[in-house]
Length: 153
Image (cartoon, rainbow, N blue to C red; front, side):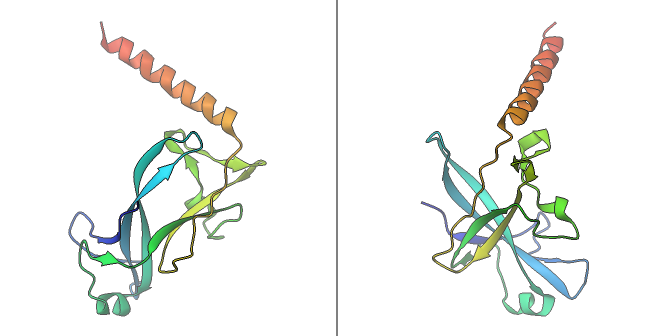
């Protein structure tokens, strides 16, 4: 049901991105996944991950835009940061609210990873700050409705 993993180019057509350290870089890969939520609602979503390595190694693989890769992209969620120097980087945030998803008051961190391991699975954590998020979404809907009324003079 999921599409193959494909190499993705940026808007300028570049395949390899350079990290802050010029010796290291990354290639972005994408995959369209079929997701079914807790209410049984099916939707497709494109997810992406970075394959990191030395610039020399990445160039040596001669990646091409649209190139299909073996494997899949998995989603990893945890209550411990993936990056302790910049933990906010991987916070799981609820849409446009900007509010971090939490479990028992602790933030949930989310990262995607490309893997060739056929038995690798998503590791997901269901957030429990539902009331806070519903309130935030309700406030957003009220603001949008109010703005729309202003333009319907």
